[in-house]
Length: 171
Image 1 (cartoon, helix red, strand yellow):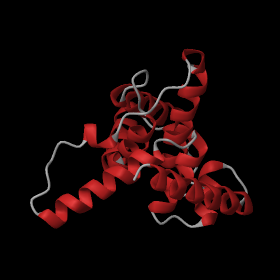
Image 2: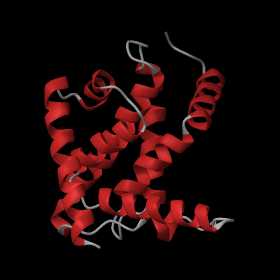
Image 3: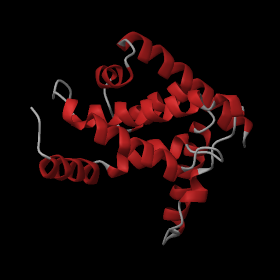
C-alpha cells in the first residue's frame, strides 16, 4: 500500500523515535575511526526511510529495524574493507554521563568493559551477542540475521567463549 509523503514521514518519525535506542546500540558497536557513529546512524535512517514502504509486516517491526540496522552496518564495513581492519571505538568514549553512586559507577564500568569486549568480535558475532543481551529468542535472532536457529546457537556459544577468553586476557 502506497502512503502519501506526509503519512510516510509520520510513520518514519514514529518508528525511528520508538526504536532510536536499538538503532544507536547497533551503530555504537559498529562505529570506529572510519565509520563514525553519526555516519552509520544516518546510513541506517536512510535505509529505513527507503525500505519503509516495502515493509509488509511479515515480521515484527523491531525485527525489521534490527535487521536493517545490522545489515546496514555490516554492509558498510564490507564495502569499506579496503581500508583495513580497524578497532572499534570504546563505548565508554561515547557515554559521557557519570554514575551517581559507587555501585552505579562500578556497574557502568562493567557495562563499558562488556561492550568494549563485544566490539572486538566479528560483525556477525557482535550482532548475535547484542541481540542475545536484548533477550531475543534464538528464533527471533535467526529471523533478524538470516541464520538458522541451530547456527545461531552454535555461533552464540562460540562468541561467549571468545568473550570469556578476551575478558581473562584483559584482567
